[in-house]
Amino acid sequence: MWRSVASNALTFLVVLVFLFGGVLIWAQNEYSAEGPLDAPICLQVNRGSNFTRVSEDLEGQGAISSGTIFRLGADYADKTSDLKAGSYLVPERASMSEITEIVTRGGASTCGTEVVYRIGVTRAEVQVRELDPSVGRYEEVLEFDPGAEEIPAAYEDFKSAVGTRFRIALAEGVTSWQVVEELKQVDVLEGEVAELPAEGSLAPDSYEVVVGDDRAGLIERMQNAQEVILAEAWANRAEGLPYATPEEALTMASIVEKETGGAEERPLVASVFVNRLERGMRLQTDPTVIYGITQGEGPLGRGLRQSELRRETPYNTYVIAGLPPTPIANPGRASIEAALNPAESDYIYFVAKTLDPADGHNFAETLDAHNRNVAAYRRLEAEQANQ
Image (cartoon, rainbow, N blue to C red):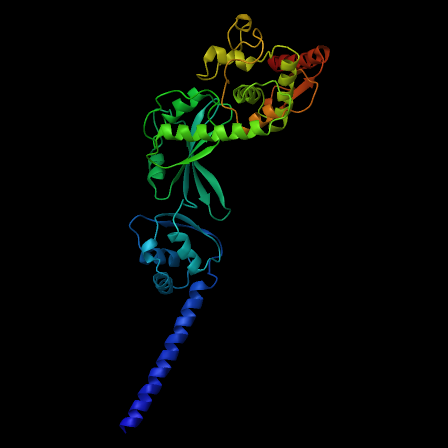
């Protein structure tokens, strides 16, 4: 009898082991299998959260088939203590295993809110954007002037949200004074900039920052980036250019930057100024005169006066020969490369095609041809004035 009971018990135990093994294999397959999501979602993991809350959120959004299997799988993979707060893009059909990896690997949030502090040539603005998971693109939800007396109340909510990312976007052609002044308005940064950076030394680009970053440290990042760009362009420069040093090339690049916003035109504009230098002609460019007046402290806000065009200053290229003593703005990579690899041309003049700067310029090899282009531009000005 006891032998029969023992035999039955053993059989029952074997069946249980097989059943458990089958369930385990099924659960492992479920954990690694393609998930039920039909479209990407943005999953927010709050500080102090745990896998139970995350699994409930994922189940509620239809991203996983079983919260229990998700939690057990994460525990089996020894990931439960690695959960990171943030906002994460969960792609469609993501498996539970892939989602576990997404929320535990750390690093920057991959969706949610992004606050961009844009420093432009004529204005600065703060943009708050949120990623639309369905299209994988950021959509603007708030925009305002950082210097305004009243900052939108919603900004504080966005700024303090878990996973919010912050970027400083520096436009080509801004001056160092503008950069320092606008960074003072960026309230997620700390510290002072003790000394105004040399003009031209800051690389226009987008810089990711975190709350509490030091302003002086960010300036140093911008300077290091510009040094790398300039050194690389100088090493790959064309032969026979009229620059004795990389700094002179940087000055030329800043002039090119201020004369055109069209990327395709920069090598041609650079060729005009290089041709002028090589022929001993004056550069005769308004942006340098303007910089001599403003010292880079914001736009002039009016047209140049004849007296200003005749006045001798280190930056009045209608009067002085050669380059001004320093750059007149912070040029971007494209303008630096154009200054060091200008187009081959015989052009020595150019003037805007239309009243819209986006339409580019007419170039000329002779003064007669240039005068015709200028006359055409003046007619457009007169037509607009009479409308």
